[in-house]
Amino acid sequence: MPAQAWVTLIVGVLAVVGVALTVRQRTIADKRTQAWQRITWCLDHTVGDDPDEAELGWDIYTTVTDSPLITSTEKGVLKVVADRSARDLARTTETEHTESQNEQEDPR
Image (cartoon, rainbow, N blue to C red; front, side, top):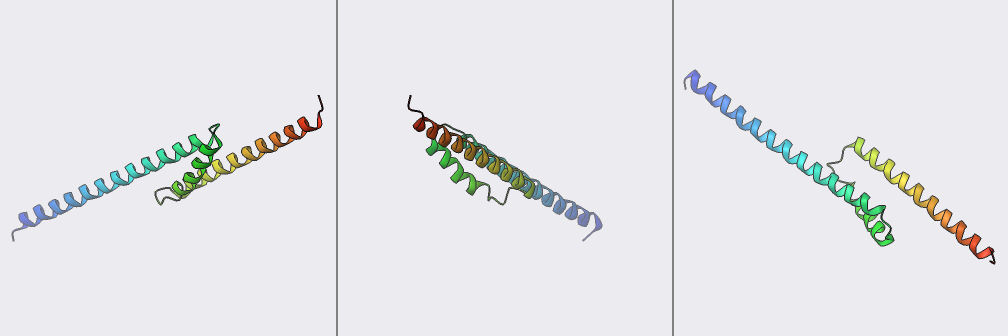
């Protein structure tokens, strides 16, 4: 086989490998985008007024954030968001409980 044929073959193989890697990267990027859309959907539902909707949001949030598409840095961010929300929820529940006790004690 002449040298020109070898060069053409090598260039062709490299082009196919390059296209395959580009398609793979694009597919992963699209899947990561979809994962983040699911996470934001969950977070939107966790801050709603409906407790059932918030519970559903947290249940799905746990599943979605276990995705292998989420990097360790992003998992750290998501953990901070979950911890902050849990603290706020505990604070709100404690405030409501205290207000409820005060209303029961106040005989107006």
